[in-house]
Image (cartoon, rainbow, N blue to C red; front, side):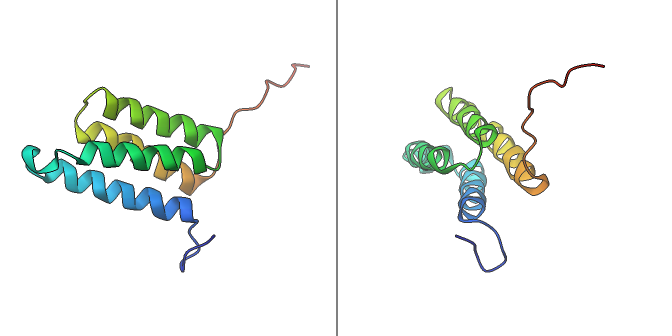
Length: 100
């Protein structure tokens, strides 16, 4: 499903997640007690709906950062990489071509 500006539902949900992580990053630490759990749930859903294996791996890295208790900035950085990857298209590496 595409949004009004041609973005896929996945892209829209990823941007929404980035906004939530940014807001969490700037919030008081006490104010966001349940936020990591909500973010983890959203990451799990996004991982299941990711349109490529590379995006799924990136979302798992973001989940690992969250699970490891890394700062919100580390999680956001991984999500920015995924957003940028969506903009340039898939960069999946295929099998090496034989040399001649």
